[in-house]
Picture 1 (cartoon, one colour):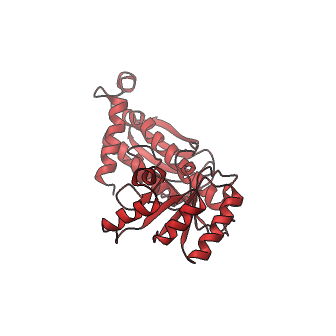
Picture 2 (cartoon, rainbow, N blue to C red; picture 1 turned 60 degrees about the vertical axis):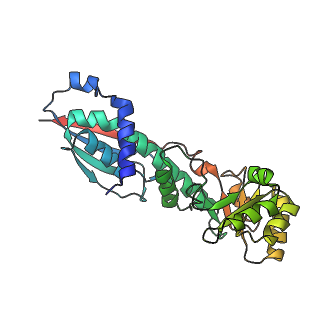
Picture 3 (tube, helix red, strand yellow; picture 1 turned 45 degrees about the vertical axis):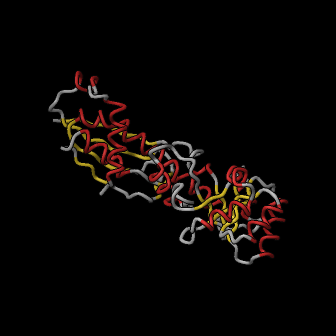
Length: 283
C-alpha cells in the first residue's frame, strides 16, 4: 500500500509530463490494443528504493497494467539484476516509463549513497544521519531511502525537534537566552539540540541542559578538543558533527568521538543510479 501523500506526489509528477494532453507520441504511433512487457533492470550495483512509487505511477497511467516486484525496497542488487516486470498496454508502459524511472534513479541513488556512508564509518559506533536539505515533496521518500542504505534520520521537519542554530542564537541574544525561551515554552516532550561553534557556547549549551550538541564547521583538531570538553562536562551527552562532511572525510570525523554525523550529501549529493526499462511487444 502507498499513502495519500505519495499518490499526490505521483499525480503531480505525471501532470508535469502529460499536462492533460497525454503522451501524444505514443498515442499517434502505438496501436491502442498492442500489449507490452517492460522489465526494469539495474545496470550497476545499487540499493533499491522507490518501487511502490513506480507501481503507483503505472497504476495511475493505466490500471490494467500488472506490476510485479522481483525484489523489495531495501534490497541490494547486482548489475544486471531485474527489479520488476510490468505487463499491460504498450501505450501505458511508454507513457509511464520516464516518470517511473525518474523516481527510481533518484531514490535508489540516495539509498546507494547512504550505503557508501554507512560502510565508510562501519565499526566506529557512529551513525551518519540526514538533514532537512531535501527535494521539496520528496522528503519522506528520501529519508526512507537513507534508512534503507543503513544511515539514520535526523528530525523530519521543523515540528518534531528543537534545533537552535546560529541565526536563532543571534535573534534570541545568545545560548542562555534562547534556552530560557525554549524552557518557558514548555519543551519537555521534544529533544532540544543546540548548534555551537565556540568553546564558550559549548559550555553554556551544556550548562543550560541541551539534549544534543551540534559541533558545526570544526576542523578535526577542534572537533576532538570540543568532544573532550563536552564529555568532561556531561558524560553521555549526545554529540553531533556537521558541516563540510564528505565521503572521503567522514571516517576521520567519526574517529573524533562524536555520536552522530549529519550531512546533506546523503540526499543532495547522491548521484543517480543507472536503471533501464526494456520493452517488448506482442499481440
